[in-house]
Image 1 (cartoon, rainbow, N blue to C red):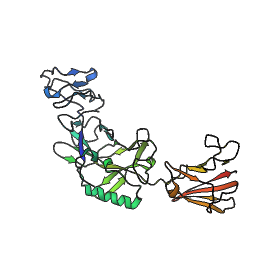
Image 2 (tube, rainbow, N blue to C red):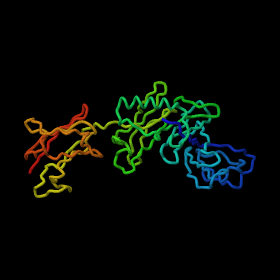
Image 3 (tube, one colour):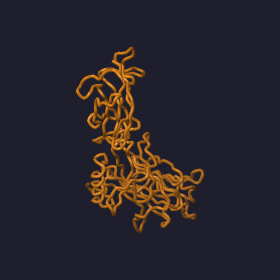
Length: 360
């Protein structure tokens, strides 16, 4: 793994006291409810009052193009590249804090007083695709990843650009201590075509198997975090944020069989309603499809008296996003006779059994 990460300092000024005696700059205007809008901070000389609930909007700084700013509440702040590139401001411990990278790849929120040993602090979110170094030694990430793949297989893969480092610092030091109250961290995964498979993964990694992991630097291991959920609409994995560290998303082989089912049932390709549409009974060329199958294991077809008709290796015939087609033939390549058959799907220690009727 190469160096080449980027550090984004995103922070928000939740409350600020300006000198009461100083005049308010002409470029600024007071917002209703105690909010404040700053048009050009380079000429700001104070004059504002305490901000209400940390509400603040900034539109420009020296060397920064003028652009509308998104106004947030409760300490949320949105900034843009400008005089500080990347920008950084300050959080106060008594107010909630929230930040989201401009590209939406990661977002973090923390409750008030989550960082109690610092009156003010800054939060950094750094991702490799932003092209600056991480604080953590990359060799620790490489070793943890090697151990994970050796243990869980190639499904436990990730893209380096998914690595996210979060850290808390002030003018004196960077801390790696846990925070006092859990925050919420959301990481966005890539699924441009909405097929439920992480883009460019081979073998395919299903979004359903994703979890967020944090690096244990001492043991050089990835440690799974309790998931708050996978949001397929927003393509995010959300977990409790417990403190600074390196985070990523890792998948696993999908071995769930409880949702497996065949269709069409009954299979009757030459009956009065053949075809592939709803309520139709199939075609000989398409055979019987098993849906929601796992990524490894096998599906076996038996006669009612227990004789094996066909055993199908799932990995050989698996089609995204989790389908397998049986051509309704036995292991010798001959069409099976009309009748009722037992099917059994097995993946690891998981299994499911059902019936299918075939009528020629």
